[in-house]
Image 1 (cartoon, rainbow, N blue to C red):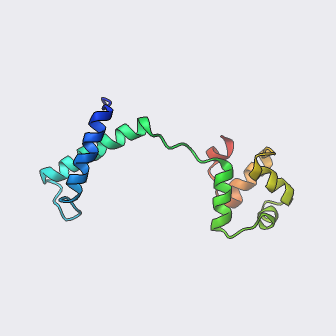
Image 2 (image 1 turned 60 degrees about the vertical axis):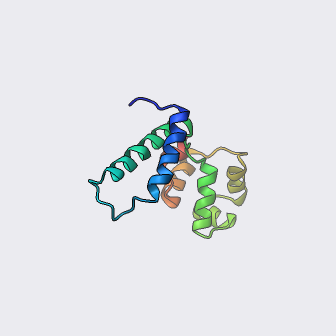
Image 3 (image 1 turned 45 degrees about the horizontal axis):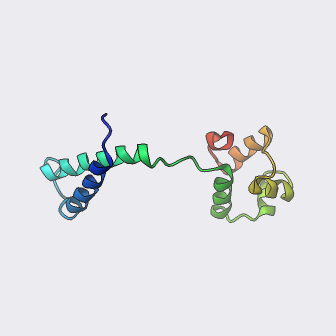
Length: 119
């Protein structure tokens, strides 16, 4: 797929703003405006994947998110992972490395993707 320029990207965004006003879920997929909407969206997505990539979250960020989702405090997480509060604090502050054994427990107990743990 050929890469688009920044100028084409800006133009595509402006066109998408116009199309959003006239194309919605009830617009037939055969409608030329629907087809253009999809083409313009794809161009924008292609440009953004190259120029504005979204990286993988850090393990610390994901652990903090899981703690929030599961309403866990540091002591609760330590108990869940069968480790000390100081170890958890060290992980979260980036002061200590997670062992392979802890990585496995974190994966199992917090359902965190192995790629995030091993990055």
